[in-house]
Length: 156
Image (cartoon, rainbow, N blue to C red):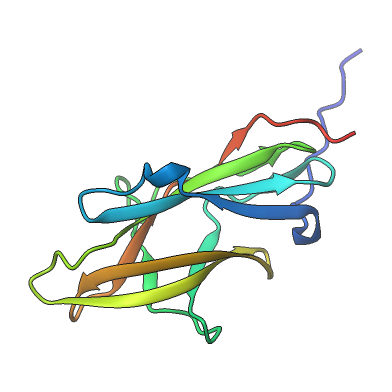
Protein backbone atom coordinates (compact mmCIF):
# COMPACT_ATOMS: atom_id res chain seq x y z
CA UNK A 1 0.00 0.00 0.00
CA UNK A 2 1.32 3.43 -0.96
CA UNK A 3 1.52 6.17 1.66
CA UNK A 4 -0.49 9.29 0.96
CA UNK A 5 1.64 12.34 0.12
CA UNK A 6 1.96 14.78 3.02
CA UNK A 7 -0.55 17.59 3.11
CA UNK A 8 0.87 21.01 2.24
CA UNK A 9 1.63 23.22 5.21
CA UNK A 10 -0.44 26.37 5.74
CA UNK A 11 1.09 29.83 5.42
CA UNK A 12 2.65 31.15 8.63
CA UNK A 13 0.41 33.41 10.73
CA UNK A 14 1.97 36.68 11.87
CA UNK A 15 0.46 36.24 15.36
CA UNK A 16 2.69 33.16 15.75
CA UNK A 17 5.91 34.74 14.49
CA UNK A 18 8.53 36.85 16.24
CA UNK A 19 11.02 39.08 14.42
CA UNK A 20 14.45 40.09 15.69
CA UNK A 21 17.55 41.78 14.31
CA UNK A 22 21.22 41.07 14.99
CA UNK A 23 24.03 43.33 13.77
CA UNK A 24 26.47 40.58 14.82
CA UNK A 25 28.65 42.97 16.76
CA UNK A 26 29.40 45.13 13.72
CA UNK A 27 30.25 42.26 11.32
CA UNK A 28 28.17 43.98 8.63
CA UNK A 29 29.97 47.30 9.02
CA UNK A 30 32.82 48.36 6.75
CA UNK A 31 33.64 49.75 3.33
CA UNK A 32 30.78 52.28 3.70
CA UNK A 33 28.22 49.51 4.21
CA UNK A 34 26.16 48.30 7.13
CA UNK A 35 23.49 45.68 7.67
CA UNK A 36 21.71 43.30 9.96
CA UNK A 37 20.58 39.70 10.18
CA UNK A 38 16.79 39.48 10.19
CA UNK A 39 15.38 36.43 12.01
CA UNK A 40 11.78 35.24 12.08
CA UNK A 41 10.98 32.67 14.79
CA UNK A 42 7.94 30.42 14.60
CA UNK A 43 6.19 30.04 17.97
CA UNK A 44 3.26 28.20 16.39
CA UNK A 45 2.80 24.99 14.39
CA UNK A 46 4.83 24.12 11.28
CA UNK A 47 4.04 26.51 8.43
CA UNK A 48 5.38 28.02 5.20
CA UNK A 49 6.93 31.45 4.63
CA UNK A 50 7.62 33.18 1.34
CA UNK A 51 11.38 33.21 0.73
CA UNK A 52 11.58 36.89 -0.18
CA UNK A 53 9.03 38.82 1.91
CA UNK A 54 8.48 42.51 1.25
CA UNK A 55 10.67 44.68 3.46
CA UNK A 56 9.96 48.33 4.16
CA UNK A 57 11.88 50.80 6.28
CA UNK A 58 10.09 53.46 8.30
CA UNK A 59 10.99 56.66 10.10
CA UNK A 60 10.19 58.08 13.54
CA UNK A 61 6.88 59.48 12.23
CA UNK A 62 5.74 56.02 11.01
CA UNK A 63 6.23 56.99 7.36
CA UNK A 64 7.81 54.63 4.85
CA UNK A 65 11.24 55.95 3.85
CA UNK A 66 12.13 56.02 0.13
CA UNK A 67 14.38 52.94 0.09
CA UNK A 68 13.73 49.90 -2.12
CA UNK A 69 15.12 46.40 -2.37
CA UNK A 70 17.65 45.93 -5.16
CA UNK A 71 16.54 43.48 -7.82
CA UNK A 72 18.12 40.04 -7.19
CA UNK A 73 21.18 39.43 -9.32
CA UNK A 74 21.01 36.78 -12.01
CA UNK A 75 17.87 35.76 -13.82
CA UNK A 76 15.35 38.47 -14.60
CA UNK A 77 12.68 39.20 -13.62
CA UNK A 78 14.37 37.16 -10.88
CA UNK A 79 15.03 33.63 -9.73
CA UNK A 80 12.19 31.42 -8.57
CA UNK A 81 12.03 31.52 -4.77
CA UNK A 82 10.85 28.31 -3.14
CA UNK A 83 8.83 28.91 0.07
CA UNK A 84 10.60 28.16 3.36
CA UNK A 85 9.27 25.41 5.64
CA UNK A 86 9.36 26.82 9.15
CA UNK A 87 9.02 24.13 11.81
CA UNK A 88 7.59 24.89 15.25
CA UNK A 89 10.22 26.57 17.42
CA UNK A 90 12.60 27.12 14.51
CA UNK A 91 13.50 30.28 12.65
CA UNK A 92 14.32 31.61 9.23
CA UNK A 93 16.94 34.28 8.57
CA UNK A 94 17.95 36.74 5.87
CA UNK A 95 20.61 39.42 5.60
CA UNK A 96 19.76 43.05 4.91
CA UNK A 97 22.62 45.34 3.75
CA UNK A 98 22.82 48.98 2.69
CA UNK A 99 25.28 51.74 1.82
CA UNK A 100 25.95 53.60 5.08
CA UNK A 101 28.25 56.40 3.93
CA UNK A 102 28.16 59.29 1.45
CA UNK A 103 30.17 57.49 -1.24
CA UNK A 104 28.35 58.86 -4.28
CA UNK A 105 29.50 62.06 -6.07
CA UNK A 106 26.11 63.56 -5.08
CA UNK A 107 24.80 61.59 -2.11
CA UNK A 108 21.50 61.81 -0.33
CA UNK A 109 20.49 60.05 2.85
CA UNK A 110 17.35 58.59 4.38
CA UNK A 111 16.98 57.84 8.07
CA UNK A 112 15.13 54.74 9.25
CA UNK A 113 14.06 53.85 12.78
CA UNK A 114 12.27 50.57 12.06
CA UNK A 115 12.02 47.68 9.65
CA UNK A 116 8.72 46.12 8.61
CA UNK A 117 8.36 42.63 7.14
CA UNK A 118 5.13 41.95 5.24
CA UNK A 119 3.78 38.41 5.67
CA UNK A 120 0.62 38.13 3.61
CA UNK A 121 -1.50 41.15 4.51
CA UNK A 122 0.00 41.55 8.02
CA UNK A 123 3.35 42.90 9.22
CA UNK A 124 6.11 42.28 11.74
CA UNK A 125 8.12 45.28 12.95
CA UNK A 126 11.43 45.76 14.77
CA UNK A 127 13.52 48.80 15.70
CA UNK A 128 16.30 49.51 13.19
CA UNK A 129 18.22 52.77 13.59
CA UNK A 130 19.92 53.17 10.21
CA UNK A 131 21.03 55.81 7.75
CA UNK A 132 21.03 54.69 4.11
CA UNK A 133 22.78 56.59 1.32
CA UNK A 134 22.03 56.70 -2.36
CA UNK A 135 22.86 58.84 -5.36
CA UNK A 136 20.77 61.96 -5.93
CA UNK A 137 18.16 61.27 -8.61
CA UNK A 138 18.20 57.49 -8.07
CA UNK A 139 16.36 55.31 -5.57
CA UNK A 140 18.15 54.57 -2.31
CA UNK A 141 18.44 50.79 -2.15
CA UNK A 142 19.19 47.87 0.15
CA UNK A 143 20.09 44.24 -0.51
CA UNK A 144 17.97 41.41 0.88
CA UNK A 145 18.93 37.74 0.76
CA UNK A 146 16.16 35.12 0.61
CA UNK A 147 15.06 33.60 3.92
CA UNK A 148 16.61 30.25 4.79
CA UNK A 149 15.59 27.91 7.60
CA UNK A 150 17.81 27.66 10.68
CA UNK A 151 17.62 24.86 13.20
CA UNK A 152 16.13 25.87 16.51
CA UNK A 153 14.63 24.40 19.59
CA UNK A 154 11.36 22.64 18.88
CA UNK A 155 8.40 24.07 20.75
CA UNK A 156 7.24 21.93 23.64
